Length: 76
Image 1 (tube, rainbow, N blue to C red):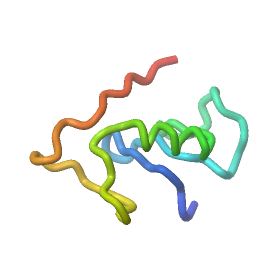
Image 2: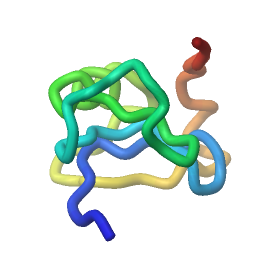
Image 3: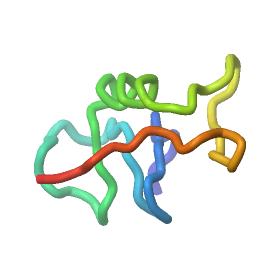
């Protein structure tokens, strides 16, 4: 079990964009469906997407009052 996975953004149940500190081989499948990013890149994507995270928060669940978020198309 991996702990403290950084910059997680779920796009479907059990599937997310996130930083991966446990390897440095990006661009090839290595996961059950998540998109592994270098932690520095995961931070950039996390900060680029909406809704913005309020100050001093480290997570948020998008509700109907939070808008739609940011569409990210994932492809090979």
